[in-house]
Image 1 (cartoon, rainbow, N blue to C red):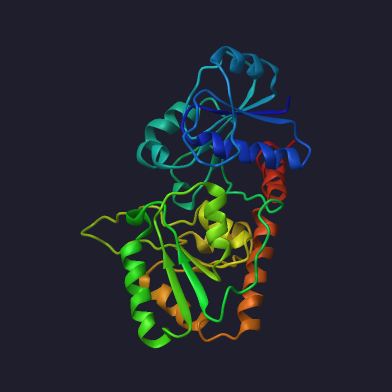
Image 2 (image 1 turned 120 degrees about the vertical axis):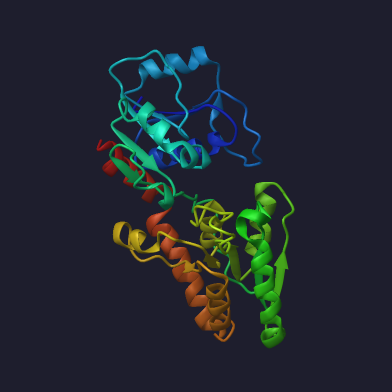
Length: 310
């Protein structure tokens, strides 16, 4: 086996499964395994195994990648080791985790832009991938009005209160042009994708304004929900503090970057003045961007050639 992706608990098994699929797309023999049952509602995830079975697979693998900054002693030697840093564990404890992983890994895979430059060894930026074969674009309008959706997994983290206030202001000038659908209801993945598919514009998140010297949301980067909406062919508005670095490393980004509520309003006012053909072109450009940089093939190629160099 070429690559073994090891998750320790909770929904990390979803990310490792996605990376497994990315690598298989480019001909790499990859397997994602997890030690603990995931609580996620997504349909696909790493296979759950006992620690003894996991160690047997580790012995057979050339490359081992530990997921989400969690160290597992697999009892193997002379293996190429990598670690994936993504999320609050590394964000809050990067100094300690660098001491743990830097001596034992070749490279560190970083998920979000805010985690770059924190001392991880030979860091490589790998943003989320989406299955563009499974998620097909839905460009058709559902009615005469433009439908704007906001479906936060966390109203606090996504700054839903601020986003809702912006949309209320816009209703005064454009109330006859759009319908705003806002819900934080948790539903299974397929139902969530269906509700996003009915939208024309999807607002993912916006970094909250400063509260004293701290912000509620420290990272300010787009996530899986944003790239899934883009794959559906939606115009996506979201925060992206690492926008400039992204365009240097990846290329032009077709998301509408909004690192403030004023920026959301500015984007919305412009979008609501477009005709149908102009709006459709933005949708198609957004879908094409996902295919080019964040499809399974694109991410698998980046992992194979830039991370592992195999």
